[in-house]
Amino acid sequence: MAVYFISDLHLKPEEELITKGFLDYLKQLQAAGDAEQLYILGDFFELWIGDDYTNPYIDMIQQALNELANSGCQLFFMHGNRDFLVGEDWAKANQCTLLDDPYVLQLGEQKLVLMHGDSLCLEDVEYQKMRALFRSAPFKTNILSQTIDQRLAFAQKVRGESQSSQQDKSYEIMDVTQSAVDEELSKHGVDLMIHGHTHRPKTHQWEHEGQNRTRIVLGDWTDKGWQIRWTAESGFELSSFDLAAIA
Image (cartoon, rainbow, N blue to C red; front, side, top):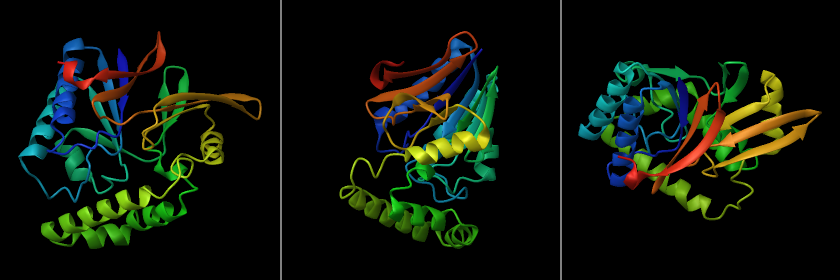
């Protein structure tokens, strides 16, 4: 059996290739018959304004996830910076288990920590202040008390401001801070981390205080998708695939 990890699909109706590619990906997992678990590590949706909002697109994604779950694959979901308002109602409807960030996972003899990754970007001070505000209980309660139209307008405003601010930030500021990575690994007593968020897929290996460590970064989905596949025989394998040719 195999365990799969994906992140940063940023699903929205306008992205037809990504949407079709994801639906085909789920069908492929079902057809292969080896998918025991699928972990979605944040920014699954481009934006999420609350579980009480729905439309035909959201319903379509829900149906596809349920089909995979009904085939015997366990689904797990971790919040990202775009979909931190996903709640228990959505999770239940999609047969997903919500995970804390960070989350320690045991696979065979390997223990690792899963994260979305945005909390590791400590040099982006402005973003961390915004993140702390948005993830606070009072803020979420206030947002969810607003009308659908108000929430949609707010989400679009924040998205526009975020895109604008990113243009002025350096490559280094928007990447993870190495000391934060090492701190998380040490805190949880592990030597392996998997995360997304930065859109910089790569397997990093280094030594810290005499311990060999690994950080595997998932890529975002564009014209190709990214996954990590784990089996007891092969370990963790980061790979990409052409979304247009996946079916």
